[in-house]
Amino acid sequence: MTEVLTNVKQNNTISRRNFLHLSAGMAAAVFASPALMKTANAAVISGERNISLYNIHTGEILKTVYWQDGHYIPEAMAQINHILRDRRNGEIEKMDKHLIDMLAELHHKVDGKQAFQVISGYRSPATNTSLRKASSKGGVAKKSLHMRGMAIDIRLPKVQLERLRKVASQMRRGGVGYYPRDGFIHVDVGRVRYWGQKV
Image (cartoon, rainbow, N blue to C red):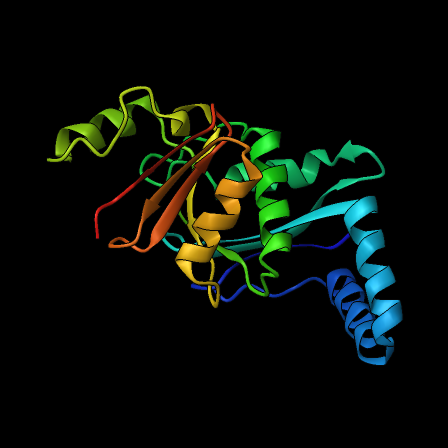
């Protein structure tokens, strides 16, 4: 298992153990044939789940295997909860595991190469109320699933936002909101529904 949590603003370093894991992985990727790579990718998908997140507000980056051999890894889930905390007051909430699974699958389906850029993860009730008052167009739901750790606002570098929205919608895991003017999509694991910002 490889877990890396860094803050790009503080320029933290990767541990020796993680470096060795990463080096071995890169070496294997360089010398593996396409057939072997396909088999290896299938094994990774079935045997473990990983997630890559970049919090655009704090500068933190997390790349971790969070599920392995049929179990969620507590330490990795705690790191996910931390990076997706309410940035305005530091409150941390347990993020819904189904949301993290959905993100991991979405990343795979669009063949993402970089980390999801996180615009908003968990929101405390106080933050949600404050944002509702500041929103002139009612863009913040009173009972937002962000407050329950069931929603996230994201974008993915080198993947068109429209494609990200389309694939997320086809997965039918919950709600998908499309905000092209603001440059992100909202995904949640509530009931299946779709909405969009007028371009």
